[in-house]
Amino acid sequence: MPGPDPHDDTSRDYERFEKAQLAQDRDAAGIDTADVDDATAENLVNELIDADVVTPVPADHVLVHEPSGTTFDSTTQLAAFHRGWAAGRDADAEDE
Image 1 (cartoon, rainbow, N blue to C red):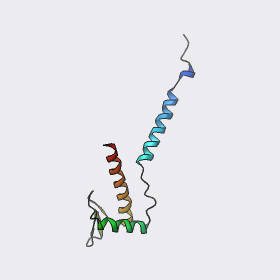
Image 2: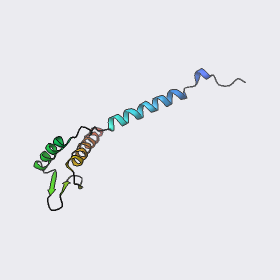
Image 3: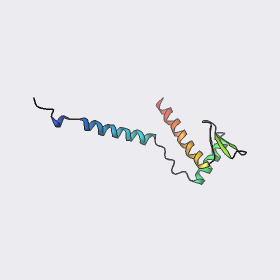
Image 4: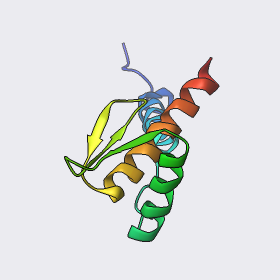
């Protein structure tokens, strides 16, 4: 009895498809925060403070991201976090 025909083997196709799907998922979920420089972060945080999304705590030298309850001591970290947080919420809203 002859073995399976090597030309009918589709396992490599499935592996390539799976890798492509995983790469697309990572690309869709990835949020670009590398472009958050100090000036951009400062502007975004000021807008968030005005919108009552961020509360400054001068005594502790921190900023509190109210929707998540996360505390930051850097405007750049806060800006990058908020971008990712907002993008994640937007992605969740699209899934509904």
